[in-house]
Image (tube, rainbow, N blue to C red):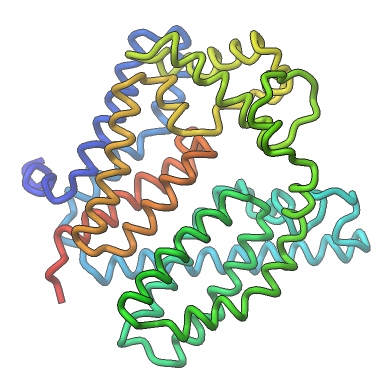
Length: 373
């Protein structure tokens, strides 16, 4: 415990994660569905466990360990990509067609069908791909990396970019594009790595365009202005934008009724479903949709206090990444802050583990080890 107290100032994000966990725990006092609330608390235990473990064993952490963690993330992602590719190819061979259902998400190399063998949500797996891509982008700029290694990194980047398009998510592509804009801006400013980033953009244009076929199909049925402005949420014919409009509208209405403390972690989803019913969003009721926006989900469950802690956590990570020139934390912050706009990532165990582990790991290492050679 003494070591934890001595080291806790080295990672302010740990304080915020623990506070978020404690606020979630306290919300059980005024929530009515205690059993569901306890289930959520247990799911969020990494918010408490990771800070305690990492701070208690801080003497074992160094730059080499950080590199190894990111390397193993990359190896795991690449292994999963190969396995999923082989399985999708096998399914295509069995059915005699890669898109037997003849729909945008019905082919074996897209969305849920692509990641079903490893049993992970494709959008959440996409966050691992994005962070792995960020790791490779940073490795391209290292002067100690040989030309041979850089060509390998370049090839792997193209593989990950293609896979992102196959995962069939607009937000994943947007996040990757934002990362590339910041990266290209840095390269232009420093005058380094330009040959590799230009090569990556040129070599990936055609394969990523072909991989985006099913995203193009999804766009055909979307009327952006109408889907954003409609207040008629009846029926079952929903585009991605219209469905998110219905979720966001209902979420904001629940928040307005309980702005200070929220409805409690146990009642957050049930109150939202009730609002869906009031708004005639029967499709949302049937599918039991959450907000698909972590900021709104947190505001519904924990009120102003919860959303303040979450927003400050994101801000702190971005600030620290710039202050300490921590590119890993910067990319991670961009990924999480944007991903939370379209997914309630703290509603799934995979999202909770990803966010809590890397936010503490990346923030702590660079604060303590920034002068380590």
